[in-house]
Image 1: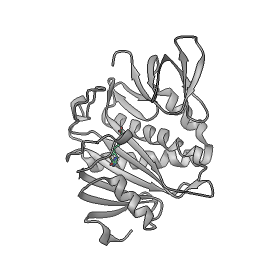
Image 2: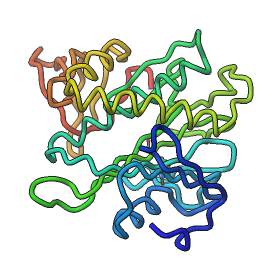
Image 3: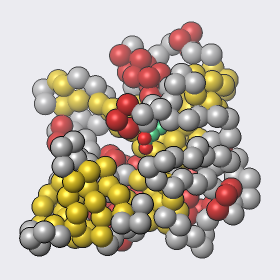
Length: 259
Ligand code: BTN
């Protein structure tokens, strides 16, 4: 990526040289910027942060409301992993967000909701959007990890309750500190994944998992059941209410009974 491509607000090198941070005052979507940078040949470890986004992207084509005051960042990785393993980064990112939120809210109830939501007191506080590049020899050319963390504001959502760090009692956490902590945690879990495989992440994720009754909303059906675990591929294992069969789910929107 060339500096010319973006209006660079600030540039710094963090974390043993692995991360190179570019901070933009505003942009459409940091995921789109990271994708563009990847196509231009930028190396793994590039982080693009924007203070606000005009076209923030959420999952399933939804809009991610992105006013100033919250964290919006995308990490470009070239993980050279098999395509089926790219999803592990989703759990890795959720763990890093979990620990970032824990730093600011030491006493709060914080849980992880499959596949990558972080809930504070039952309310969604962050969003994670992974976007993979084209395949080359059964490996993605790049993986963009986009993270939004609500710090000072959140939009109301008719589908589920939402919150932000300040609303939960954090004392004006600077966005830059939240990013720094997040990247430190992300790097710790990335190295764990590389050295130990998904199993360590899986155990850590499970120790914070939201359990109990849930509804998995798939494109053409709903499955009502009880959380059992996640398997070694990261699929959700749900014990179906109808027949007590444990079904693996690879993609769905998850809702809880009271939502
Ligand atoms: C979700 O719908 O839960 C995922 C939202 C992901 C939002 C982040 S903000 C930074 C990055 N840039 C984007 O356009 N989206 C992601």
